[in-house]
Amino acid sequence: MESNDWGLLPDRVLGQLRQREWDNRSRLSQRMTGDRPLPIRVGLKPPSGKQGLAQMARLREFIEAWRHFPHSTCVTWEQRSYRDLGEVTVPKTLEIPSIDSLIDCLGPEAREESRHWEKIMKPIVAENRELYPVLSKHLNTFDRMSEGDAHIMAALLPQLSHGMGHGYYLRGIPIEGVDTKFIETYQSLIEAILNFLYDNRVIALGGLLGWLGCKSRPRNWLTLRTLCPTLTELMGGHELLQLPAEQVMSGVLPVDRLLVVENLDSALSLPHLPGTLAVTATGKNVAWMKADWLQSTPVGYWGDIDTWGLDILSLAREHCPALTSLMMDQTTFDRYKHLAVREPTPKELTPYHLTKEEQALFVGLRDAEGTNWRLEHERLPQDYVAEQLWLWAGV
Image (cartoon, rainbow, N blue to C red; front, side):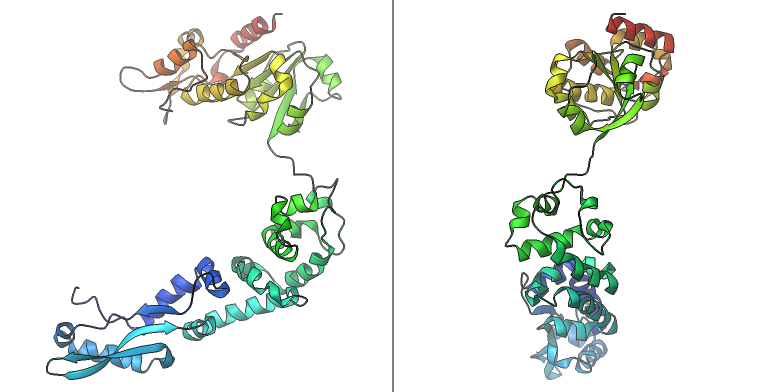
């Protein structure tokens, strides 16, 4: 042990306690619920005989600091024998037996935070004090909750019942006196409370939305652009629209062929193609391409000629094996290589679902000097793009 590695003083110990046991809300919640046992013990590192004799002034400071510690009942002491000093009683451990003792030791700031939590919890537990352990696991939420929000929570909980959200999105469920954004803001806390009140059935049904029976909020939006007037008319007169990926998967769209384009601006510059719908700006969100109806529909994919563009092509082909890659070939790259730029962080492993030609292109993008090149698909001239798409569509 180093000569200075002994004798923790109260300020340092209390700082450690605040950081490790109080500001760490997860640990504090575990202490409050009994998931992490009490007491909390902190070794004060009393010195060995040799250390104490070498720094006697510091030893006296160490002993006096803990002798005058306001919460002396939390300090355990032991006798040690020091040559030339005889038997000396030194502080050995700080032992915090309860949360109340921890608050007392940490002082006014911790006491004020504790009072805030009690004030916020009070209206929620008014009808059921057994909720305290559940609420204690959400201290971070109570840090930011106002007293007004606590009363709103108390008014909301009795209105929520199993299945009441059937046919509604969460924002549309029929409740009184509470804005539905409130439910989204405190969804995790509400879910935990209801799960306790209803014997874990909320979690068993997939969480709050499943228990209420609400429809899931649409996600994975796809941007669609019709490429011919007839298709625009069939789409209600809209050339450009957005649909959730789930809706595209579940419903057969009235198209002869589908064209997936990596970049939105490139999709906006596409030529007219009869019976063709373009889907764009999907990134790696291509799982929707496993839809049954797409397996019997001609599908083309056009993205960047670089390692990541070919990786997305591979992901798309995994879901839709019959798709055709467009302008992602060696001929296109060689023809417009003068427009290529360096790819800063290329993908290392060759994707699995590429044709032999595409795999060779992937490998060949790295030159003899070890530089990877990328040809962004929006750099291709419009006349070349139109020519290749017309060939694909057979027009």
